[in-house]
Image (cartoon, rainbow, N blue to C red; front, side, top):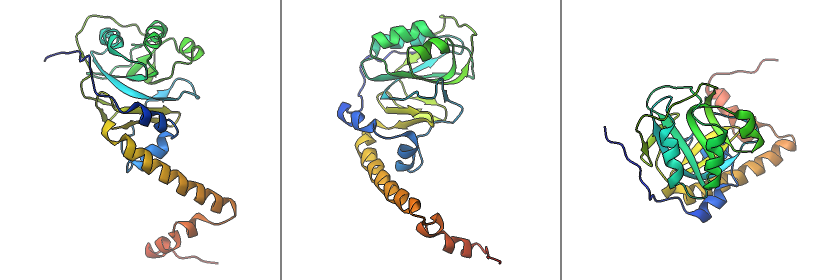
Length: 225
């Protein structure tokens, strides 16, 4: 198996990424036809964590963070590290010192399908992380991997340069070629939800707004007094 570090990648348009920051993961997921959402076992290490940036992908051997160190060298301001492992791992592959290094190179946050450590320190420095586990289990720096190749993270394929948005509801991947289209769809969805919110606040029922009475009838549900 070959291993590589790709230095130069095409990233999603920076202006479009700024606009993407306005939307939460739930809205973006729905706007993309309920796609792009990573599995919910990836959780933020603190409730207010929020990130929006472009993916630098990392494929690591489990329990080995050598390639995370290598990835930081090719990061640019606005990037998000997206780290996968070649088999299941909950080892603490990222901690405070790596976060300090990553932040010095403009990294906005981390999504990792493994474990992290030093969560108190990461929270204090407000470095947003979504991880599979929290573990003090240490790692080594011995095995080769790859940087900026397509990876699958928590069930979603991520290409280098894709948009990554994370909040307390999860992490969503927006393909870099679709960011502008997704922004338009998300904005339209938000406008519809604003209108629906006003109607619900005035006492209308979701049964009527969404036409669900007809659905109940078609499913054979009958009212009784």
